Every structure is written in C-alpha cells, then in structure tokens.
Image (cartoon, rainbow, N blue to C red; front, side, top):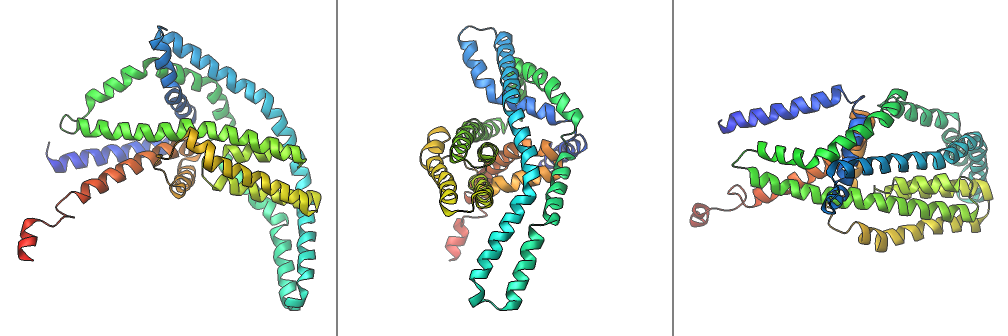
Length: 359
C-alpha cells in the first residue's frame, strides 16, 4: 500500500469513526461509561490476578463492588441533593431579590461619583440580570443538556448495560489489548505502542488521580461550608469538588455561587469572608498538597485545553462527548507533542548542509 493510499485509508477510518459516534451518540453513553470503569479498575483486576484470583472472579467482584458503591452513594446522596435542590429552587427568587437590594445599596454609596443616568442604567442592568430572564436562560441550558443524551431510557440503560459492559471488558481486557497490538502496522508498531503508553500514562494520572482529588475536595468544601451554616452548603461544596477536574474553573464556579448565597443569606461581612476563606484554603491545599500528591505534575493537559474539550464534546455528542472529552484531549495532546517533536527533527525545520554551504 502506497503512502497516499495509507493516508486515505486512515482518514477514511477516522471519518467513519466520528460519523458513527455522532450517529449513535444518544445510545453510547452506558457503553462509554462501562469502558471508562473497566479502564479505571483494570490495574486492580491485574493485581487480584497476581494474587491467584481467576480473572473472571476478579472482574465479577470489581463489577459488584462498583454497582454496590454507586447504589449506596445514590441512596445516601440523591435524597439530600434532591431536597436541597427543591428548596434552592424555591429560594432563588428571594436570593435574587436580596442581591438586588445589596447592589442597590452599593450603588447608593457611589452616588457622589455617578450621574443619575449612570445609576438608572446600572439599576436596569441589575434588575434584568437577576430577573426571570436569567432563570429562563438557566432552565434552557439545563433542558438542552438533558436532551443531549441523558433521557430516562439512558439512565435505565446505564444501570443495566454499564455493569455488563464493564464485566466483560474487565474479563477480556488483556486479550483485547493483545489483539489490537497484533493489528498494528508492522513498520510503525513500536512507535504506536510508545504513543499509546504515553497516552495511558496521561490518562492514568488524570483520571485515576483527579477522581480522588475531586472526592477529597468535594468532602472538604461540603463540610467547611456546612459548618459555617451556609444554606445549601453541602450541594455547593460537593458540586464544586466534582467539577474540580477542570483546574481553577470548578473552584471559581463554587466560589461565585457560595459567596453569592452568603451575601443573600447573611447580609454581613464576616460570614461572607469565612465562605471565601473555605475556597481559598481548599484551592491552596489542592495546588500544594492534594493534586501534587495524588496526580503529580506530568499530566500534560492544560486547563484551557481541558475546558475546551469538555465544552466541545458536550456540544457535539452530549453526555457521551463529555465522557470522551478527556481521553480525546489526552490523545490529541500526546499526538500533537509527538508531531511537533518529529517536525523539530525534520529537514523542514533544520537547515541542511546545502543551506549551510550556501550561507
């Protein structure tokens, strides 16, 4: 096969792959979740196999453990989240009104520096931003996300299909990897294996390490905010931890939400400072202790790249795209670095001898 035919072949493969992914994105969510869990737990299955556990027994035990853990977490967390979300929905108008009042008071203190026209314009902007239009916009976004792949059928299939997919992939993981390895083009097999090992190292550091970081931060923020007495402190804190896999973005969302609720709830400076301090301390611990210890500093995924990948994946493929965003970002990042390194060693970048002699 010539170089041009090889290029056309691989381009056709990738185009077909993304076309099928887009076509079946609404039903792929439980399968992608099962693949992710199998990848996450494969090292534990390997360790159990070293301890003389039959592979199918290790796979079944890990699948059962995952199911029990998820169900227990749902039984414990979902009722609390549901009650807080329902109560939050009833209090949002009051919070928005309180924030408008505080903003109006702030504007009143600035009257000596603003004209009447400026004050009127600011009041109109504040009222519009905190009124029904904002609630309608948020509701529209949530409806779009819900319609992007997580309907009731997908949730039910997640509970039924994902454990089955996870079990069979865990059981046959080594055979699948060996089979794919035999399919690699012989001339480029070692280079491809090296890049796959690099991708695996990046994903392992990010997915397995960052998962633990998110749980630790979620517990810390939830306990800290609840101890202060912040309304909905548990849901704000735990939610902040869950989206902490996007560095700084998760903390920023939680900080703005927590401080906004604190201002509306307390109306005093000291509780607001305490809420802000919880996020500052959490960010300090994450950056200096938790993330370096559990993840390391060789992830190779920039926060902006992660954020873009998540938004792009969610916009194109719904929740399936969100699950695939981090692996895709890791693959693209590793291959981009490999391509750049190849370019920097190529004659296209380096001056050849004829150029030097001509100079």
